[in-house]
Length: 304
Image (cartoon, rainbow, N blue to C red):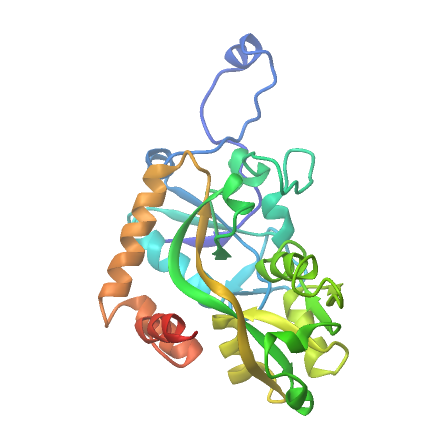
């Protein structure tokens, strides 16, 4: 299988100019595609938001189209793409996290139901970063679960004594990425649990938030369990996970709601990988997070 990162492909289907004019001249040259169309084109378009090194990294650092990807999400994508056939060409695109929810006008409208433009246009067949299932996202996307996770409170080691329970977050300063699970959860808590003493939210990229905690610039940040394990294991020795907050959430890949065939293929792949102790994803998780995918899932479901 050949792998390269490119920009949006502008030839998703064959249609004559006359046909386009007859249809009103308003159809774009790229459009969302089914699994059959992906296999026929021998091209699988994957968008990745490298919000934290625990998921993916890109070089050059500021690239968009011509990027080299590394990291767990990239390796998951390569493993799945191999199941589509040896001739499949994997086309990767870096995207900003919030852009994955943008409508045609380039805005995220949480309360509206629509297909995000990157998926609707055919620029992306799938969003492969680890997406949490939360209500407002499910009005726009379907998410196929890879693993359950919890949000972990990450603080500077020197401040560990200030954080014992979720009540200790009230009035503190938190770093959160816009429209992330953590952002949504803290906004909800600020209207209820912390209404009398809200958490002060500082919006920044997820990786920058971890660095801000390590530097003592903010009080805490929230990370999904996989990211928290990676950060304390590989990134900063002066950060520590104190406790979990919020309910158990399901994380996975995100798709257009119409792409049921592609979702089914990914769901079958994930199930096979979880069932096989010697699978590629089991080995990947052990290498990256220090425990197999199966052990990680067992740990997450045991945490109360």
